Image (cartoon, rainbow, N blue to C red; front, side, top):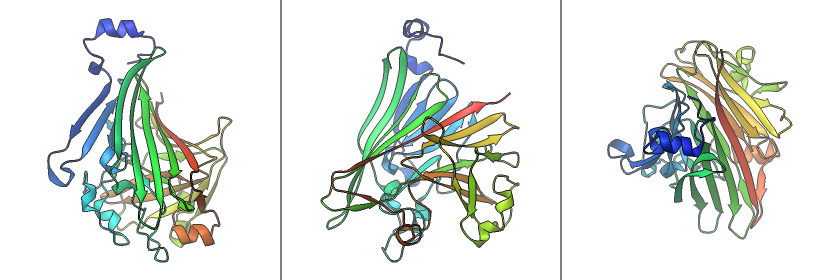
Length: 339
């Protein structure tokens, strides 16, 4: 239902509480490996619903649109960060999938034996603090947001503070993630940040196709090179499929945002990822269409996915944040119905 034509007063007359149609439900999980984790379930009234998980670095886990699942969920599901395994690939043992996984902040992508960094960094396994859930009318719009701070720090090392706000509004089919990362230390620090956006069935199926305007596509390695002609198309789940990664260079529109869309004509839905290109110049497609591992990742980032040493020496694009310096990032995810 379209609530855009309803005024605040009309909504108040029609409902006992606006929670009938939109809002945030906060709770704590009570079972399994997720026991004790805080979650904030956001629903906008348009059919868009998603779950923010403060104890997993403000990641977004389940998400749906009018009952249609959007996210890929691993067999691990909700899992407390206390189960994190710091071995090079141990991150995978505690990864529950979910619509948006934060990777960083000093390392993202492949494990880095030189810098002794494990897969995708610590961000997703670091609980947030100073959590604020807001629901309020502002200039005739009912705004909904969840915000929190995530700090990555160590003695004799980095001290980075990420401040994240996930926001949407009554009747909206879009949500925005606005991040700022500040170097609270007294020495330069690497900054690698990747938004691992994981789309699963039924949004992803053999009917799905990736679309982006006027851009280039480069395979990450020889495995991906074999699938370059089919980078934007999908089959049904394939036995023993090996993951393929493709680097995309997508030009920004006039508003400064680059856009990539996963379209599913059979469902009549488009899943659009828009990201501010100035701060997030890189975009990786992770194609993993195996049995029980059926997912595509659309991943805006300020880095590639080959680790900190490769970012510095191979690509020569490692972002360095000076003491007191802040870098801001913004992405928007929109679900669009197609006739």
